[in-house]
Structures are given as C-alpha cells and as structure tokens.
Image (cartoon, rainbow, N blue to C red; front, side, top):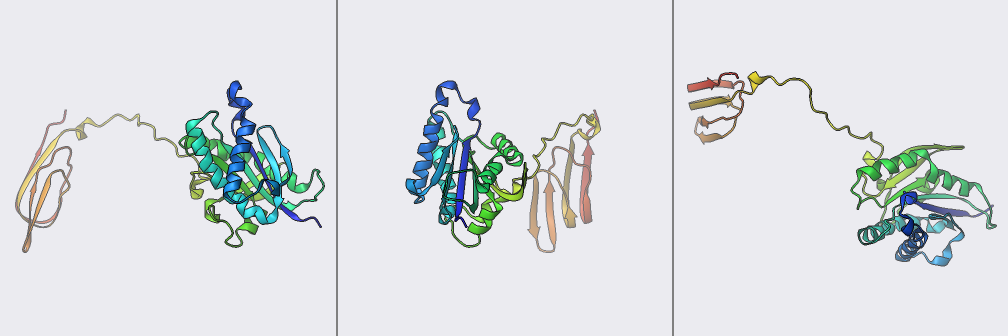
Length: 275
C-alpha cells in the first residue's frame, strides 16, 4: 500500500488581472516567498516530491509527518506577503489547499492529486475567497487555506501545530464534480465563526416622512424632594442626601414624558409649539 503524503497546492488570486509588465514575475515571487516561509518552519527544499508547476502556483507532495509544518507554513506566508505587498508590485495573495492521502512513488495522476485540486477549485471556496477579499482591508487579506477533512482529523487529533490551530478553521461543505465532502477553511484576518455568515446588508434610509410635531423643542425644570423618581433628559444633576434625593434637571432636545413615584415639590413642564 502506498505511503500517505501531505499534498499542497496553491495558486495566485486574481493573477489574470495583473499588469502585463508584472505578470512574468509572479512565478518567481511565489517560489521565493514559499521557500523563505518553508525555511522558517523547518521544511527543507528537498523534502517534497512530485512537484508540478501550474503557471501561477504549484502542486507538491510531502511525507505525511510534515503536515503540521505545512499548516504553520501558511502563517509564515501571511507575514511575508504583508511585507511584500506593502512595498512591492505585483501584490501577491494565495489560495492554498492541503490534503492527506496514499500516493505512489511513481509520477502520475492519482486520487489524492485530484482531490486536492478539487478543493482548490471548488466554487464554495472561491465564493468565500471573493467575498472576504472584497470585505477585508487590502493589507490584511493574504491567504485562504482549505484543508480536507482527512487532513484536519489527522493533524488536529493531537497538538502538532505551533502557529495555526483548529480554532482558526470553519467547516464548509464542498461539492465539486465527483468530490463531495466537508472541508475546513481558514482565511487570514477572518473570525471562523463569521466565515459563512451572510453579508450584512447596509441599512437604507427611511423614505417615510418625519413627524414634525415630535421635533419641537421641550424644556423641563423641576426641584424639590423626590423619592422613587426616574427622569430621562439632558443635563441632570443628582445630589444624594439622607432619606431623599434632590434633582435639578435642565433638559434640551426632546422629552415626551416623566415616570415618577412620589414627588414632593413642583414640576414645571413647558412645551414649545409645534411648527
């Protein structure tokens, strides 16, 4: 039986919209950033096999014991992309998929290769990426990672990762061609509890006419000893004394009533005329 491998594939988000003079630099930039991030998490360049270049991304297979490091790799890529995107062109943002499955040593097309590509290409994943790409501040959106359920259960069955935890992922049902499974998505800068929530609609201004009678100014002045009184208004001054409360209340804006228990003293309620 073939040994299980961790399969990593990635592509560049919106690479087709890159200016022509920058388009040819994308493969080198991606390769450089991934190589530096790999070094940071202890992944040597020679540990992966079956590497395939896809134009604006890549597909690689690693021995299964490197799966935790591959997940932490994404956090290192995030930090490197933030620095790059603030200072250089073209800006790079990556979609990344990780899967775990049995992979023969001979170069070829196998089920795990297909499944990791199905994850990366799934409409549900692309929809989440597009939604949050347009919602997050441009300097915060760096990577979107989708993890197969097999990989998720294997790596988070114990405490194997250092930078990224199970709590950074939200579940998403993926159905793409023959692939129909639950997967787990992490988008840098997004609370996983909000990952699949519908976008919040911006409240629209009410078209109903305003009741001018409620816009007239009111003033209230009162004084005396009050017990159990509740007065809502602006500019209240409350002085606590034994057995009673003295309230001096000067109110601007609008007031429509007073709720009180027992009042000892006087209340003058003057209402401006409606316009």
